[in-house]
Length: 604
Image (cartoon, rainbow, N blue to C red; front, side, top):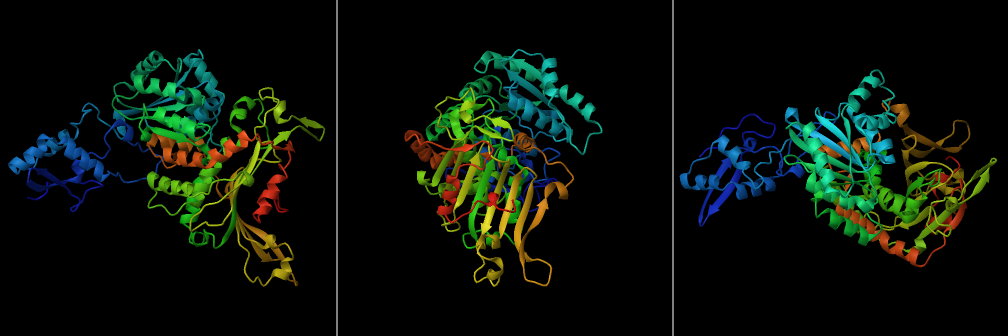
């Protein structure tokens, strides 16, 4: 029997009929079901994606095994009719059959058109993160027309506040793009009208039920998709998720939850947090955010490597001598010492931000740009890493310092920090990946507070040129003759390659110059904040830049043993002056691995 006629569709063609094998007893027949009759969305509220105007145009994709399992488990009477009468069901019967699932009243939406809405609830709306980052990111998305036509933003916190007071608080932190200010005031006013507030406790199902009622009022009978952003301390994550899941989940769309770091303090606490969250959510509903993965230059890392022929052949132990991941801040804890002292610089920066960048840098070419393919390769890198030895770690803590007539406080001068605290504010570590591509290449990490400048960058130092004809022109400093690729994540985003060239003149004098792509000089458009990209990805269901649970397990498995050893041995940090380049021990660590830190050179 021929296939049913297939209407025009981006996923259908004359050869795209989908074949289903249905067997009852020993009787087996085969029928062709047109692909266009299968709804182009996954089943279940948590899996549906929304594509905004800001997203690239991508074809709808239906995973075949999902379709197979749903057809075989849900068709029931249709499958019987197919076998008994040798007669294909009508298109109407097919569509009705596909919707006859356990949650038959759940009709999912792709987020387009007038039939759906997105409700964004910021849990912890009165906190600094919400005020400084989340609300401004949402406004920027609205300004760029990246949010869906129907959306509502709710702030939720314990503080008593009216809608008007929330809007007043939020309005103080909103800014427009530097290159687009013509209708800034009008856009702000329209955005603030979409913002509302509900006061409640984070562990109260009753308060979340009240929130659910308000959300439904604004959703006005449309298919509701709900995003909860947990901008709250980690010790109340589970309570908030439990209440939101039980009392404020979407009944007919998707529900997603963005979780901010820290994701525990070690392997045990992280695993416990994951288990607790999964009591109320599926893994694909949990979006663990690391805002560094949303930075423009970090996202450009894979583009630089995989779309430029000159880099990929060099990306291995054969040509790369070492890789440095550097993070520095030129300020201290400044009143946040109570939080920081519980975690320290290794947990706060190295175990997440820098390790995630390392995994992206070192991973093998993924099968595709699909989120799972990319995250699979990152996990392989993390699992290939050699256990970190205490001897390969240097810790430091900044002390008070007077410079230029100004006095800068030490870490323990912060009133929120215990006077006898040994918590490191600086750390440097040498890591190794035991696989064929990176065997023997040191990956050096360095992160610290109260240093001489603010920067985050990746430095790739290439090997010396064998048999270099110009060694005598270079002199004894062979490192100055080494090519170096620098990817500056912040500030002043840039990519530059250090090369050797001849200085103009009659002599033969070599100079080191930069082939420089400075973003602000090349691109006039303002670079979006990392939170804008990540919030938009969460709305769209794009998980590529979020951390999967097995990634988290692998990251903690790497750092937990060395953290425990440092804390059990009460390793005393090396003290360094506020505003300096950090402990001298970091340079000795690099020297042991035949490396010089790239950020301390003359040309830096």
